[in-house]
Length: 206
Image (cartoon, rainbow, N blue to C red; front, side):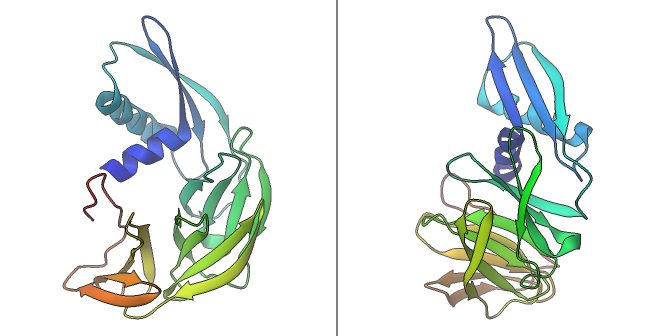
């Protein structure tokens, strides 16, 4: 649940007034207004004692994507990175206008699912078709494939970075979750059924 709450805060902007909270909601292609509205409600309910709020639609992105799956805001807040699953790439958007301002990963990733930053500011991409985690060093709207993490997982869909530095990934075809340290698999939990996603809670649990 915490994972989706964080996503709601990424895509919603809150303005607090004395008697109500105004939610400026930016739609992202592939995510419905209703879905984001429900996420906003959930975020508000757990983050503040809000008696009333107003929801305003601000803008939507252009229809330039194919099955966009995940989205993450850069640590400095300047860029949105979208796993453009159907186009086998990472799309870069301006967070204010939602305009497409760059892409990378073409010819390097296949059916990307999750995207997440590590402590070094690198973008980790769940490269589903490649059964790995592709690691990109970013320079604004451009990304350079710097490294990868693989082993023990097939059709990687979920990826998360723990504060202790471990990277966790789910294999949809291998039916497992694997923990990596320094790029090497160290722990595996099998017996799952096509695990799709993974996230780290505030208390460090997976």
